[in-house]
Length: 269
View 1 (cartoon, one colour):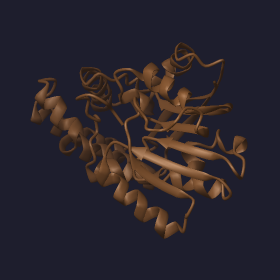
View 2 (cartoon, one colour):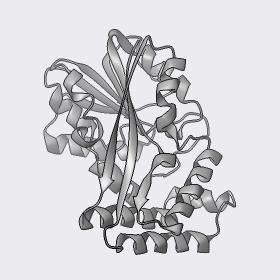
View 3 (spheres, helix red, strand yellow):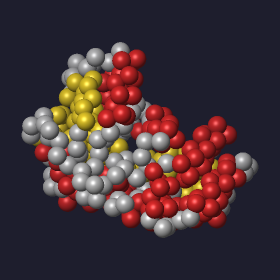
View 4 (cartoon, helix red, strand yellow):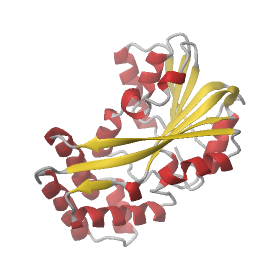
């Protein structure tokens, strides 16, 4: 969901999409659900494979939902999911979050999840979302914060991974600690009201740790993140392989757990 030459840091390797597919409206946008009306018109900006978007469609059976993303191939997957779920009030389109092809005040709800952290101008993107949101509607945004992530037990490899991730993300024009900036970005975008909240993801069971740690062990060496780390001379291939091994070692550590804080805002135009 970027304009110009800016590329999504993670790319669309299957290890990335496996993470996106696991997201649902209940796990990733629960703060929005109580505010939805059965006839709301919803825009999901940066929808990826559509796993959250189909949840919106289920919540607004008398309304409509449009999901947009800059990557056409991932929208094919989203359409297949919508068809499998039988959601006929849902469509997907290729779109640019900075210049969305919708008239002003088109939607009751505009939603974005973990997209702003990858943009070089998140305030401009929020301003565009504000433009297409009706005066009585709201914009909902949720962003994680890498600098605030924590885990047990201490791991030099995971600490090095996080430091490297933040360097790579910023070299690509993003802000990996987006969560702490989110409310300020929204106010800078001109919203009249900004209501902030927070939630936390936790990976603590054996299955959850294997899934999460395995994803990162793979993403470090195979996704676009690896290309940008090596291409930007921020890490050598052997460094990435060592960090991947560190993730796998952490997964097998007794009592290991990983926590991700998420900031959330409900913004009124």
